[in-house]
Length: 396
Image 1 (cartoon, rainbow, N blue to C red):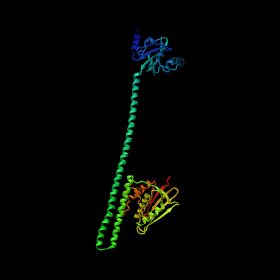
Image 2: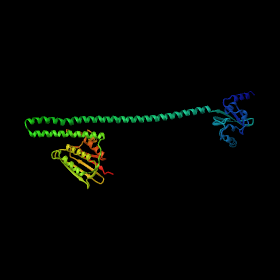
Image 3: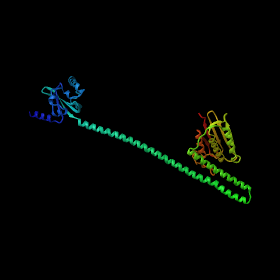
Image 4: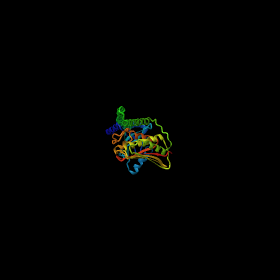
């Protein structure tokens, strides 16, 4: 008797819910903890099928579970704890761990189930999962922001590097300009000053031949200075975008012959310019002024960097596809190490020595040709001459 009272006291004061049912699933007993958990009164549960405490689909299938066990003896939950969901009186559901034991009592079989509420654990897990998801989103967003920031820093680094490289190029350009200008202006000015002083002496003591020699030297110096200033003016106009392209159909053969005649006058001793045109047509759509300036620049270089008793080959060709203009000489050529910088402004190959020049000519030629939609190419070897070719496609 005392044992029965003790057992009853233990069941009624247990923290977990305890429910017993018969072999047909009818509730025989339910302790206060289980009633509080499901929200029922004892009278609402005892004598009724246990499935009133179950949500669907278990509610409809529970009787079948018991019947299958009686027929087959295969246990799906008896003796095995598992997590299930319970249905409260208000229709809400909650998770709990269910442990079912088969009990033989007074020549009959009953099933005792211990119900352990998992609501707090699952709520904690859900909260942890939520925090984890929030953290993952935050990390993802921060990572994206970091990647974006890194990309911006890389871009800024590239821009700064480009800016520094540009500044370096400008400083080199400035250095080359100062070096070139100081040399190229000083030489002809010194020549003018010296020749003028000598002329004064030859006037006092008449010496016509020497006077003519020095006046010719003055003229050459002035011509050189004029050429240098013209190069500067052309560069300034190109940089400011003030040069306009005025294309029209021009007689390239007539222009080539005129240039050849003009440039022959400034050739060195026994230097000869040989002009040749190939093609049935001499007409092409170009800017006559820009083409002329480009050709004169190329031929001037050939005269300057070739010796006496040499030939300068100047040719034009018009085909169905394009027009090509080429100037070839047998002069000092361009060292291979200098060729990559050939079209840079103020750049001069290291083998030019004391030969005057600004280092602007080929840069100006290339920019003129680009304005007309053409291209420039060259072939050169040191001491074996240089060939420069301008190519223009037919207009559409």
